[in-house]
Image (cartoon, rainbow, N blue to C red):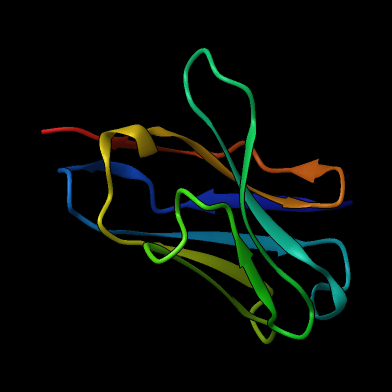
Length: 111
């Protein structure tokens, strides 16, 4: 079955950086479009980035220029490099394949 396991979250000061990783299994990763989504406390789930099987990327406007999605097909991994983090980026971040979503990793941006 599809498995998605995120890691790399933590507490970071405003302006800092984090790199999230998502380990995947149970499907043909190389042909899969992958997304990152996030959910802040009391808010709806928010799509933030996507990468297709050809490496074409897209971003939600609030993270454009700060976040970078990438993939390693040999390792079946997808990554999210997050720079210039802001308090409003605080959320649980999850990777998503189709309707499948991992449990997520907490990112807290606070001084």
